[in-house]
Length: 256
Image 1: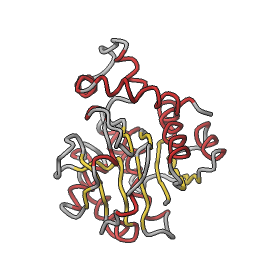
Image 2: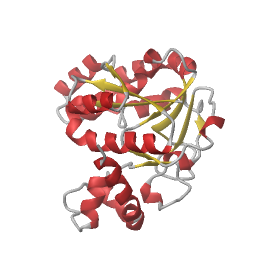
Image 3: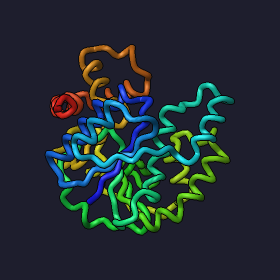
């Protein structure tokens, strides 16, 4: 199965350790065919990816101009994360061979993909966001994409984002959920497992949603004041799970 992920080259310093973690874990625990979408110029990270056999696609989100104008009018707008987040909507334009692909954010750690082949969604399959048993609010950090069908929805998703950028609080995720409504299939939480839910040996994809490994390492050392309150809250939900997952994450991130 092809695996897509994406990042903004202007955030390479922060993204590179996470990308090493994701790619090294995929190589160790899966047989995924990795593809990376990069916004911005080639750099150290993209060179490493190419050395690892990852197919790289250099392109920007088609609404980059809208994002830049919105940033000029709204200085607090997080352009750096938006520029990377909207790249997942480009998968349909890039992928022309396979019907189903896996998309993840960069901050994931693969443990297994057993059973993923049974999910063949009408458009998208996604797991819950914050609440493990929730069914209303999916998280786009891990998605199985029915590429031909998803491609038909990309224009409406982009159109909504353009019109309502100030209301896209989770960037493209907000637009995807608002446009698709109920038209998505639920993935089991094990395919998008958050450390703040606790440790699980059944977790197949661990998603460092919120605090990243480097953040968890500092908070385990008592350095809380450096992080926003939401990150502190998530970490305090289950510090022992972060302690358990952290050594593997750091080891994977440190591999050449």
